[in-house]
Image (cartoon, rainbow, N blue to C red; front, side, top):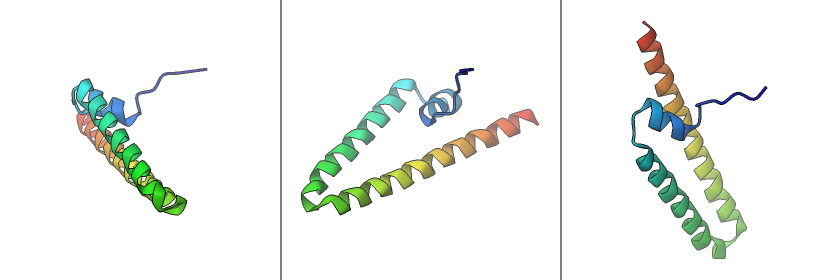
Length: 81
């Protein structure tokens, strides 16, 4: 059975944190632009630096997502009390 969920970081930022949807979308777009341009800039140096940069981005994005989810869960717990 397919069920919708609201656990994507963009959805949590907009729906739970109250940040305007357009601001979240612009932020995501700018972040993607930065990563894409950085990869294009790093590419002439070699493949290993590109992989390292993307791995660092993945770790950073994962940590940010974890932080947002944890913050939202704490807020939900406070509201239940």
